[in-house]
Length: 355
Image 1 (cartoon, rainbow, N blue to C red):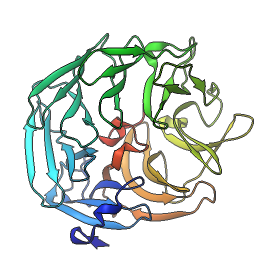
Image 2 (cartoon, rainbow, N blue to C red):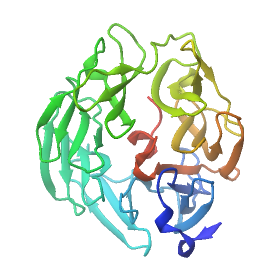
Image 3 (tube, rainbow, N blue to C red):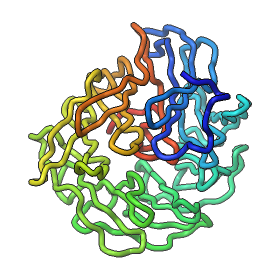
Image 4 (cartoon, rainbow, N blue to C red):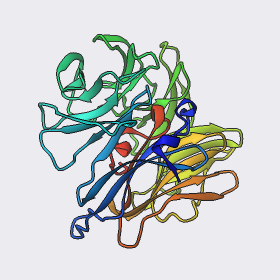
């Protein structure tokens, strides 16, 4: 395991992640305090210890890692109104600020460098890093869960805003709607950038109770289907994310018992569920690099977390490398987020559970 002084800052890019880990157990009814450590994980599974908090039963959760590599954004789930902490990784300096509305859902840093934050609060708004409101980018159409994916230059965002997907300006206002044919438009949620020009989007087809993945160009060109409509009888009941590897298309999807599975989409469109050795329950892809996935595994059912692991997984061979495992009677991984948000959806980054 490396130290903060050994971090190769110039090499940080796709496949790197920050992870909050505890030897305690903050689960309701357990309340076992334990030290909390922030690790940086490289694409080969190497760990660097960045920061450590004293023993607690209330660890902070990661929200985002700034694009300039220098800072991490965390929040305290026990505080209201929303309390955020910005940690300067190289120095350990922490700055704390609050947002005025208790219901604020922090989306993450603005891009490219993380000089401000985006917040879902009666729409999408931009705040400074001291909690000062800067701009309302778009007003909410309804009270649903809002997401915003910033472009690499930070000038635009793709948002779901009740009436459907839209490309908006970071200065405020809609540039163009991004409709997906045959979908219940209010259900469409941007998962992540598929490439520089297209966004991967999960939508519910009209009259259905599942989710299907589409690739949506932000230019306004016609979207294309990536995955077929799923049925409740298969291991894959709803697609939420996907990755294109040389060995095929892999999806992250809802499985049985409200868990999240990883599967390979076969030539006929069906999904072969993949087993992640050492993981029991849900599996969430945090980051990808080359032929491997950094996977957070949950020991849970019906949304009740028991422990959380982190492994490097090769979906083509099924091999794993243990990165972080919980000690007996401890939670282990509290939260994890990739550099430039490669893979993980924001509510997973904040320590949340699958839908």
